[in-house]
Image 1 (cartoon, helix red, strand yellow):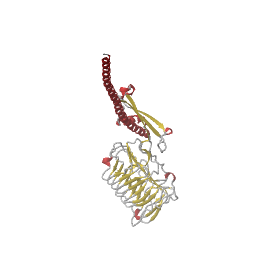
Image 2 (cartoon, rainbow, N blue to C red):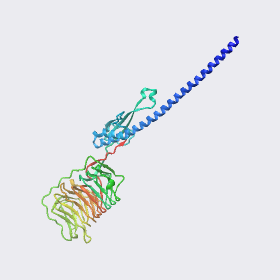
Image 3 (tube, one colour):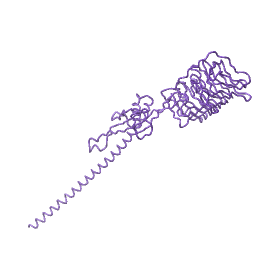
Image 4 (cartoon, one colour):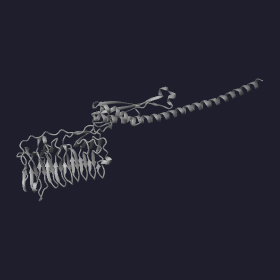
Length: 450
């Protein structure tokens, strides 16, 4: 009996062990399942949070650039609105009814610019944008209640305040300020064209005309280059076009020269003549001045020429032409006008500028660098007509009037321009450089620097 009882006890023990081993398998399986589920949860939520962080970074970059552009324009009060709009466009809605994103801006001066990754000098201002938004997770909150909602932040730094000097300033407030056609060309070296017109057709470039400049700025924010730049007209790809500029160009004009009695037009019959002040750099006033009349060969002495009527360069005849003047300045008050005829061959250089032979023209002090100044209020059109050939080096100022380089002209100007409008046609070429202070266009180029 004892032996049989022992055998029964052993059998009972083996049965119990067998039943418990099945429970262990279940427990191990449950543990492994929860372990794998945890990894899956971390993978899903981690990938989601990574995606959200990338979106936040993109939103912060855009917000920083938008804010920096406003600061560089001098519109600091609009920086926050611009940053919020940029963040919203990049997927982080700052006005959402639930869990809206927030954009925090910090505007700092150049003394606080410390980004070591940039080799450039510190900008005058820079903006830091931090974008935050609560991000609910799918699984992590199951394990830790503090992880149910994460705040994802990203920061970016953008620098702005780049500018472009203006060398062609067109002050007409409406209509087409710049009209180029028929192979005309503007080349503005290291400077830009600023157009004050607020109209949708502020600039027109057609008929194989071309514009190459550092910048083209228009007050108009509705100018449509698709309808106004056509028929092989072109703007260089390197030209930065800025529409809706906040500050129009209106440079201060030089003072009017002092003059007294004005004499009659000395231009006469065929021959060789010398006109102008008796001493270099002096001032003379003409009621009218005709240069090249009847095929004469005329030379202009250095100095200041006030013309109260018509300043007229006629076309040469019998092989004769105007020998021009080095170191000359023309002042046109009242209703005085300038006309350069078809076929006129002229050579005019402003004071202190480079002559055609490479020398420097005599100085005219305050009027150095200015060739023609048609006084403010004088609305007479300044005309350089078709077929003329010239060496002209000096600024043309007609702040109240149109300037026309038209009808097949092959004239090449090296000049800065101030006018109400500029019309160019027929191969006319204008080359400008920032030699005078016609204003600065803030081109609002903001660049990420961190």
